[in-house]
Amino acid sequence: MSLDPGSGRRMRGRPPMSEINVTPFVDVMLVLLIIFMITAPLLVTGVPVDLPETRANALDQDQEPVQISIDTAGRIYIDDEELSRNALESRLREIAADQSPDDPRQIMLRGDKTLDYGLIMGVMGELNRAGLNRVSLVTTGSSESQ
Image (cartoon, rainbow, N blue to C red; front, side, top):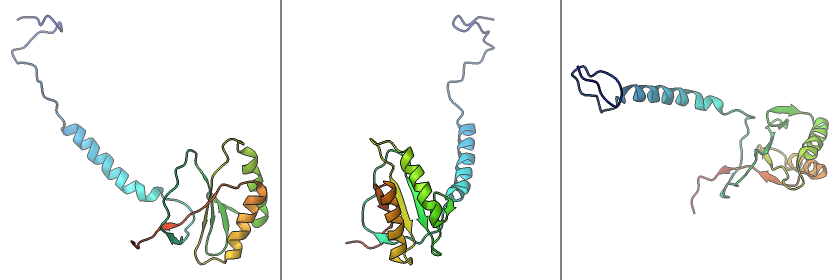
């Protein structure tokens, strides 16, 4: 028997295999694909809001914005936490106090399209009073083409 000078192992008469077996890799990737296909729809959480449509482009953002949602019943949510109108004012002041002057927080306001205009403007007034002036109104993309 001869020794392989590079590895210190004994050769048993078969040449070393120079091909990679990719079958286990493909099996793992298929399992992961199935897991992601099942879990991805479950990850979408939030307040169900029927957004109006527009043809505006999406915004580029560096930090995670604060999501304020108003559902069809007029209930107000910050992220997924429901707040009363009185608690909204104090919570907005907390958010404003936590922001840095150099990089103000982006606020994403989502309101159901069937809501009274005054309710949405009331929330925008509270945002302005708290000093949160970077407000974006969230819409869905329009299905029409020009």
